[in-house]
Image (spheres, rainbow, N blue to C red):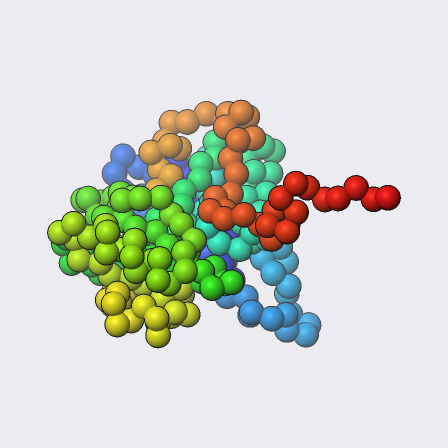
Length: 251
């Protein structure tokens, strides 16, 4: 079963084609593109400028066509609200147009799964992304064989609350944090939260595909499931914070 996987939770666009057999998913082709934090004159603006062309590039590289894709796996966040909407809208459109099943997984869980081979046994993996506004998107996962299991739900936390949550969850596990979020808050986290030696900094599309494999194998197109799939924002948007009762009526 050929599956297209995608994550757009950060400025890094990660896409992959995977073959789901009876065992572990096999990566057929993958592509990673980094967007600059600020637009560059003459360059593409955001992930919307590259999707769905990136999927076309992967199909071309693997000598496949869009109808050959039998399922879609998408990273649901947390992360950039705009980035998540772009990625999800693109794959929901593909899923609907081609009548293919779609499934989603935590972007932080994909980081944990990708980094798991670098972690010693008994590690509490703490993947981190910069949520800005003084907060960090944090996941808490333990490795069980070839899968990662959430110890508690993903959250957006200030650094002191993250340290407190990690201390409360150790229970025999040694915590190790990593990702762009750790780099952004290293001065506050470093003394109390060890850093995992890994190259994983952002969500990984191939890991998203592996996380969604069980839900996609043998699945049929389900329009109700497609409609219900939404980004995992974790925290409220700026509009919800500023206007909790909705926009005021114009006089």
